[in-house]
Length: 155
Image (cartoon, rainbow, N blue to C red):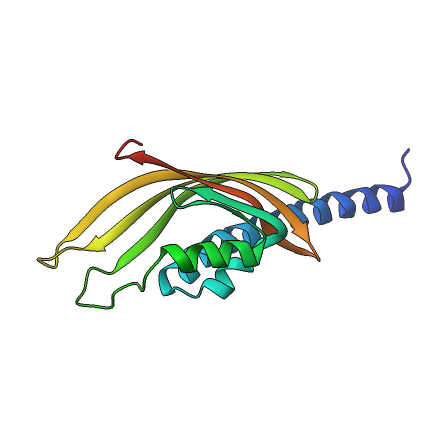
């Protein structure tokens, strides 16, 4: 007959491992949300700090590594996001698929741009997906590599 205290400890360890996975997934979801929030508000300093010290962003604007390199690249490429009633652009992230592997993870997220058109009507000019490699750095999830791939219109 198994020792009751050993069985209890085994079950508690399983529960703790499952809770840690849920917390990690939630923190990664928040990282993905903060990415779009900071990008749309053009808070490029906060945006760049979502990347690991050696993290890389790659996409249509180019490629840069490290928070400072990413911020500098975007400051040279992005203008302000026009406020209403201008053609404000919002990033939309949908359906993140997150695969955990200890202190590393991979994620894939569908993204789109929504914009207020000249007549005030909704426009969705772009649709694509992000391929992410993530890492835990100083106890926090960060992007190790984020690749933005545009699907519509095709590259």
